[in-house]
Amino acid sequence: MGKTVIDAHNISKVYNQEKVPVFALQDVHLHIEEGEFTAIVGPSGSGKSTLLNAIGGLDAPTTGQIILDGTDITKLSENQLIDFRLNNIGFVFQAFNLVPVLTAKENVSFVMLLQNTRKDERNKRAESLLQEVGLKDKMDSRPGELSGGQQQRVAVARALASRPKIILADEPTANLDSQSAANLLDLMLKLNKEENMTFVFSTHDQRVIDKARRVITLVDGKIVSDVTR
Amino acid sequence: MAWRNIWRKRTRSLLVMLSVVIGLWAGIFTMAFVKGMYTEHLKNSINNYLSHYQVHHTDFALDKDVTKTISVNGSQLKTLLSDQRIKGVSPRTVCQVMVASPINALGVNAIGINTRYENNVTGLSARVIEGEVLSAEKANGILIGEKVAKKLKVKLKNKVVLSFQSADGEIISGAFKINGIFKSSNSSFDESNVYVNAAQIQKLAGLDSNSFHEVAILLKDNKYLNESKITIGQVFKNTLIQNWMQLAPELDLIINSFDLYMYIFVGIILLALCFGIVNTMLMAVLERVREIGMLMAIGMNKRRLFSMIILETVLLSLAGSPVGFVFSYLTVYYFSHTGIDLSVFSEGLSSYGFSSVIYPSLDVDFYLDIYVMTFAAALLASLYPAFKSLRLKPVEAIRKI
Image 1 (spheres, each protein chain N blue to C red):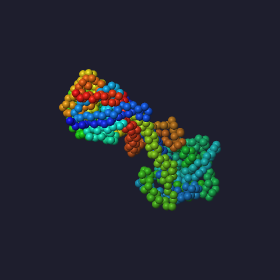
Image 2 (image 1 turned 120 degrees about the vertical axis):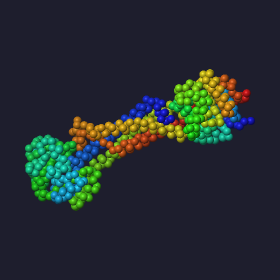
Image 3 (image 1 turned 45 degrees about the vertical axis):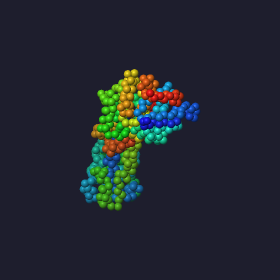
Image 4 (image 1 turned 30 degrees about the vertical axis):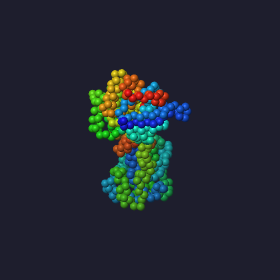
């Protein structure tokens, strides 16, 4: 058995508690080990993004406990959570969310700048990561000069830059054409295999689901199936 | 990154910078203009009559009686004139008189002078626009202001009668022939003063030739003001020695409070600019809600985010200020040499003692202070957008489209 990196107990998220309560997550238990490649699937409104946000420390659950690599993040203050995210979690967003005024290389370096990494080290790692995601010749391009697929590759490189333990990706292929989506998925699988990096992503995309080794299905905020292949 | 963020909306940022340039220029130039106007006013007041120091009988300030004289002899004047810091000394008699023509009569001050001395202090000859200055040969000559001449309906060579109280309390009169008509930059002064030969007044008032009511002392520079008082005190013992600030406290008040007014005025301009900057930065923050949310999500802490918005605002505000300062300095420098001719308003200006040609001027210190004030205003303007950005929650911000 591998090392547990995500351990969530009794996670519930309730919106509009005072009036008509809406349960986005209900009593979710989740246990993910290092190096897993996990897809969270389910229809719209099933709670996929809410679960990812809760795991990523972006949104606190109403009840329950989330332990990431031994740290109970539900007990961390807002500032401690920011630091925790910086050093332990890499995010890949559906809409890429790159900084438009920075080049691809600067976008990747930026996370390391926040970690106070030395400039030469930042540059070296940013170049190596961009090379790894196949964007060696686009280092000095700004996001506006890149295609959707290329931007998402930069976003993946940025997510890896801080050497996180977990990569959380919310619908990473949703805004990509089929070829770009397939390329991105291959890249994530390669990183998962070669660097034993833990990937958790929410998706609707059947091609992504097919490649995931573990598929967790959420319906109405509850886990209805958890299949490892 | 803050610098690059400014240029996301190039036109909008350029407009903010332009408003800073125009705001600074307008503020600085207006201040330089007003400062130049008051500096000239002060210079005129000192050079036209007041001088740097006046020496009087100790009771003269309370009771301008004709008997309140001080004794002035040639050796005292010589001693003062030998001092390197003193430009001119003029002993004067000052009597309140009624000047009458066959048509009209007016109450004025008759200033008894010796032209030779007075010219060194006030340059009176240069202000005579008609006729000539007083001379010992024409003992009963009188110089009157242009406006007095109009009111009395008299012209050169006409006679006027001066009536005043003599030293023994009698009302005495003397006929004077208009020797010249003068005009200074202060029409109020011209309306209330006439010049006559001091010897003639002394004779009519029954004063001896060494008795004067006032000694005006003009220094080569205002910087000698404090140190000269000792010398003057040694020459004129047991007298009342007053500098121009004591003689005209309203002038002193204007000069002293002027800097404060300037800072308040520029402060108001900068405050108005602040609102424009706050508005722009608020737009910049609200347009980037998603991006800021993402930055917080990937690990940008609040201190860094706050600093980024502060830096962005300060850079935006200060980027235009060097141009504003250079433009202001060049404009002030140009007009400080050529002057701004306001002859069309000369009548109104001269009634308040202002020249019709204004030479704007401003000390370098003022520019430095304004720079600090601009920086402080930029910092102030940055606070609201910066705090606004801190209130964003990453998960909510990322959801925004």
